[in-house]
Image (cartoon, rainbow, N blue to C red; front, top):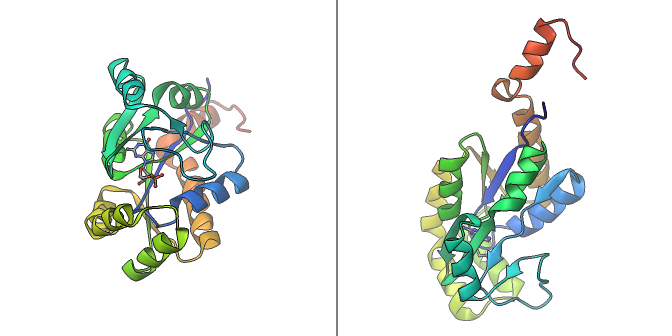
Length: 206
Ligand code: 5GP
């Protein structure tokens, strides 16, 4: 029997560096699969449909909700974002590990459906650093930046709903910590009942 893959949920305030961390994680751990979200937000310069997001109209997004095609969805900073169900369910069933990069509202929905998921919250070293990073990114309007900054400290308090908190001071360090978390989760007793059974019945564990 194939062991179910691990569902990893990464959240954090805008500018915490989730996107960069995810890219680096996927590079270092190619067996990890990134779930591309659907969004009604218009693409930023350089963003590609099907790579960064599935860019859809509000009508298309409403249809996905009506058809129960989304595992979770939320309105974030005035746009809708959601996780397409099928991709995630198929990979997990095939024993593959999947990472979602979603906001805290969506993470809570996922937590109620997948309590065995691994929930990681990325924190910037300080609020000043966060503001600096969002401005330097240069991809958002001033209005959008202000929305993101004003919700940052409220958002940071959602970290208590997660299993792990990782400070993103240096991307490499944050990525190494997340890889260590994944390794530890893979060794957790709750995920390894079948190994214990195999050894007890004199089978060999590969
Ligand atoms: P951005 O517009 O900067 O790409 O993303 C804005 C916020 O939406 C980020 O906090 C990001 O994690 C979140 N987000 C991206 N995809 C999803 C999703 O599928 N579901 C939810 N709930 N949030 C998402």
